Structures are given as structure tokens and as C-alpha cells.
Image (cartoon, rainbow, N blue to C red):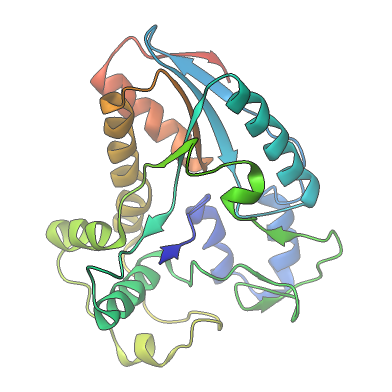
Length: 248
């Protein structure tokens, strides 16, 4: 089972605290209507990285542009490192997975599997006017990314929750958590913002940087949310001070 990756979660879930009549403005300010894909590149003279700031909600043209640039880099021998919090149903019980997902929702403040409901015209449970035809991020396979040209470089859900609880203590679920269905607005008490930032961004940036450092691949395209770029570069510099931007 795969939980959708977090593009700019700190932005996305700040929308949850807004009143529904401001959702349309917040969606616009989050950049969901932009159609260009602005790539960054950095190198340490051994490996080259092209950074794709993916969004999990966007226009069809945005994702068409992603696919075009994916095809171009694939033809040049780039390997795509993709985000996504995975769970292994062969190793974890259904009950364990359900609990982990509830704890993740408590961390991020909403259901990360559901963004736009095109049938009911809602975003994260709030009604909004989808006049621009926004869609949820297509599957990676629809963007030209396959098992043969990509690697999953993100952490597993159980590792993510274990890291949180080892660092900050056990996440205690409440009746509100158990009684709130996945497709409704999440209004339960969440974890402190500083804890959320560490586990959603910093921890995963550290793991991604190490994954890149340990990889034998020299030409890497990273497809993660835009909020991870700064942290990834920071963590790469800690490993090797030679990392530098070529374009940004």
C-alpha cells in the first residue's frame, strides 16, 4: 500500500485551518494553477541532481510539462528518485497499518490520501470552485516514470512513526481520531508544529541525502515536493561540502 507523497505539506495543511470561503484564494496562493515546471540542478562534480518540485494538485498542463521533461531526462540516462510513504502489507497487519495511518493523520493534520474530490468539488473536505480544472497528481507511470528508470527513495510509514515516537514520545490517539472518517475535515488535536516539521521534512531530507550519497547512480532526478529542496541541499552539503547549485 502506498500513501501519497507530501508536496509542501506545511502549506497544504495550513489550509485546513482556514475557513472554507477562503480555500479558493489559498489554493491559488499555493501555486496550484501554475503550469511551468522550474527545475533546479546541483552537483558535487561526481553526481548531478535535477530537482523536480512536484505538486500533488495541479493543472493538466503542469503534469504534461512534467512528463515532457521526464522523457527528456530519461533519454539522457537519468534515474528518478521518487517520494511516497510506503507500507508493506506483507510485513504489517491491517490493524497495524490502520493505526499508523491514524497517527500520520494526527501528525500532518489531515488525510494525505485525499486532496481534490472532483465529484463533490471539495479540497481536503472543504468546498471550493474548481473552475480551472485542477486534478490530483497522476500516477508516476502516467508521468513517464517506471520501475526500470526509478527508485523509491522515501521512508516507510512504520519507520516514520517509529522515528517520531522515539524522538517525541508515543502518539496517543483520541476518540476524535477514531471517529473522524478519512474523507471529512480533520478537526482533532494535532501534534506541535515543530514536531511536524521535523518528521515531515527534516527527517525525510536526511534520509534522502544519505540515499543519494550511497547510490551508485551519477545522474539523478529527484521528484519530491518543493519544500524538500532546501533541506535536501543542506543535508547533502553536510555529507560533502562540494555540493553546489548550477541553476536554481
